[in-house]
Image 1 (cartoon, helix red, strand yellow):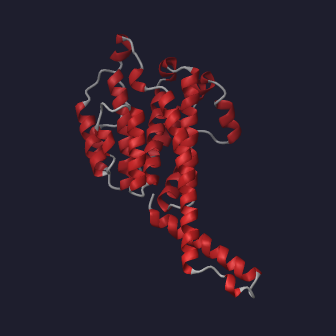
Image 2 (cartoon, rainbow, N blue to C red):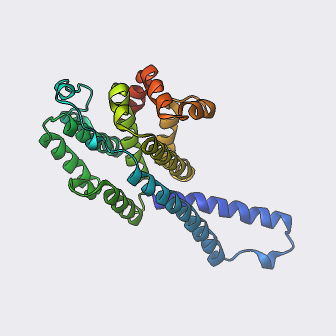
Image 3 (cartoon, rainbow, N blue to C red):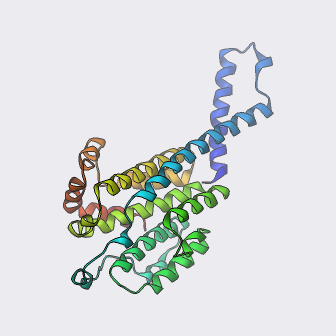
Length: 273
C-alpha cells in the first residue's frame, strides 16, 4: 500500500472535519486545531486503518492454515496421465510489463506449481520464473519452496507492511485465490473429491477476509481501487443472495463451478491484462 496515498486521503478527511467544525462555530477561533493536532488526527486515522487491516490479516492467517492444499491432492496414476493444458506457461512471464501484472502472475505461477506437483510435471522452469518475479517484486519468501505456506504468508505480510505496500500483498493473495478457483473449475468432480467440508469453509473464510482487506484499502489506494473494480466486474457470483446459495455446501460449490467454468476462466485471465 502506498503510504502517501493513505495520508493524502486521510488529510482530506481531516481537512473536511476541520471545515465542518469551523462552520458550526466560527466564533470559537481559539478551538481550531493546530498543525500538530491536524498531524495527530491524520496519524490516528492511519493507525486505525492499519489496525483494522491487521485484524483482518490475523483471521486470514488462521483460515489459510486450515484450508486445503493442492499439493496434498493424491491423484491416481491414470488421472496423472491426463496432463493439464490450462496452466500458465513459464514463457508468458516475458510478456509482463506492469508491476500489477507481475504480482498477479507470481500468484498464478505459485498455484500452477502446486498443480504441476500433483500431476508429476516438470517444475524447474516454473520455479525459475517464480524466483525471478519474487526477487524483482521483493516478495522473497516465495523463493523458499520448502517454507510452510502459513509461514510464507505471514512473512510476506510483515515485509509488505514494513515497506508500506500492503495493497500489493492483498493483490498477490487475490491472484492466488483466483488461480485456485480457476484450477478447481477445470475439473470440479476430481478436485472437489479431495476437499472436506471443513476445509472448504475455511477457504471461503480466507476469501472473505481477503475481500474485506481489498475493499478497505480500495478506499485509500488508487492501485487497489483499480484492482478491486476489475475484481468486482469479473466476479463469477452476481449478488450476495447467489453467493449465499452457492456457499451453502461443498456440493453446491462444485455444481456452480461445473456450470460456470467460463466465468472462472474470465476472472483469472483478467488478472493478466
